[in-house]
Length: 557
Image (cartoon, rainbow, N blue to C red):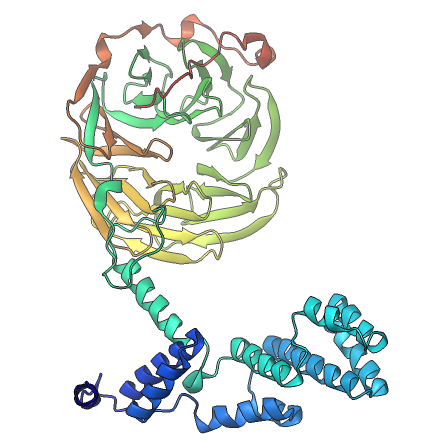
């Protein structure tokens, strides 16, 4: 067996890895480092002897010797480190020197050194100070500080701490093997087209190539809502996933679910630009070029409130923490209660979209190629930064975790730009879909927002991996252009709205029987004019029973 092992070792040593003669020794030393850290000292000694590769270089041996001999001045000359690490390491070395001065009963120097230690760590310095007065019974203090009583063990511990604090490059001892493994796994994850961070099992095997399955993509069509009165320009889920709000080219609004579909004909006199549900899904608000905002009861489709203070086209709506935000052409953002009462006004430019997080309000400025990021302090008067683009921004969406922003850029050469809302840096660019003069909406998907989704002029739906810029999947969604996509994070269902006068619901699981619902056969509400305009409703609590949701059980699509 020994002869066989020697032959195998000679065979391995004859291999030139990446053309580098030192690479094999580096690999062996990394293995030695890992074996040493795991406590396999006998195996480590055998590998050192047979490979003729030493665990410690001459530099490391000199460094270790300085620690074990307590030659701290020489140590500081040998080490190179940043200012932050310098201060922490200096504290650890001075702390060890203090312990040795106390043991030598050199109290004057110990007290002087203690003053310097207290500047860095006052709490620990108070414990160290007690050692001067409790020399005979200081064992409990050593335990409290997690320091060995024996001086040799103390110095060895300091040596190990130094290895953790300082990057030793060529003679790194502590974690180099683990780093290489982590980097290799990270690379594989970035190359995985279907990677999903929400996987419960994060203990990926090192013996197998990492590869997530594509089951997270909702590519199976379960429900088709068809026979809308014209092209469906907007389609979005309610917060609970039970309802869908839709707007068509004929300015009709549909409030639909699996059980009921209600149509509001001529909801506005001009194009409808935006729909948004309230947090409790009791009201659906719509904004239009006719300068009005309407609020409809979700269950009855009756008009409950009309806001007509805007003096020009209303282009966008957002809903955040029980407040409605509206913006458009007239240069101000309105913040409203559900009953239509104006709470606040924020001066702005022409606003195409409003996105709100706990930290920021993001404004899609229609006239410029940028997104303005404003601090969300309910005053909205402090600009944090501007996310600059070189082309027209068609649409924008924010992730559920409020960490990412995706922008649909340019109608001529369509692409998606992914931005970080932590660093305000552009992360990825996604290509492959078609846009010809249509403002196609994009969205994030999955529980951890791992996917970016967008419709296409050719009726297809494109999915991209947020983490690695890879296109994951394409599904044939509709016969004509897809105007709107909405991916519900809780139910994992995707909604697509199209020019082919239909809305489709897509799920992850296999569909045994597709459900087709004709919305044209359902009840048609009269136009808004028969209800009149309501500028301010009574307090919301008066109609609490009327608005009560049928929320028992899972009624999502």
